[in-house]
Image 1 (cartoon, rainbow, N blue to C red):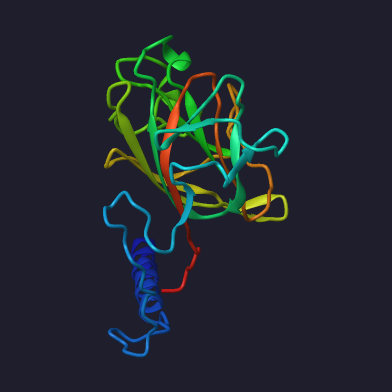
Image 2: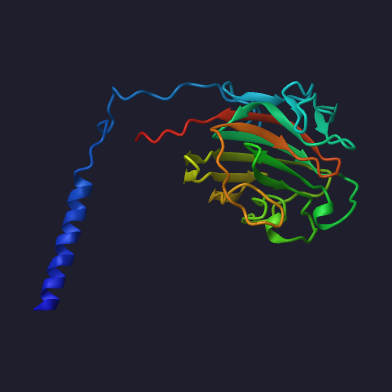
Length: 254
């Protein structure tokens, strides 16, 4: 008798779940002609070029969109031949404009002349909101710890694959980043990140665990809805070019 009652309870629960799903209310009918259509933007002439709604952060000409992270003074990196390059004691640089959720395209090149090994070879990083690091490193035949190689969410998540080109060759990151949401001092919705390196998926909607630290477990620190994009100076003459970003709206409407 008890078994029969249990089975009946399970069946009724299943029916309730199905009924609940059926009762979901949608704002729009299927193929509803009154539903707003997406805005039209013009794509770049090539897939790596910025579309019409992108904010160009570096077009190979100057560092007007950047400043030194330390004191806000003009960025001290070198600009030549269409790229910017980390200079001796140039320091980390950050964008003057701040961003939340975004789509980022950035191209980088590790030094053709190989010097050092592990984390001392072709090291830099892209920091979203000034806090969450996507590692940049020469990981071509260069052993290091997994959560610190190129394409890692530093100290958290190794890339799915190592798809690095040889030193001195240009590489690309295409990133979808969704900013975290805080309710007071508590993270209500963690940040997520998807990354393609050289056209290959290396981070698949990874849920970021918090602010990037060195040799310390990441944790969230409450902050505002936007922050600067930062490029790290790790003492290597790294090069970057063709940097553009699209601001994304975290829209949950179906």
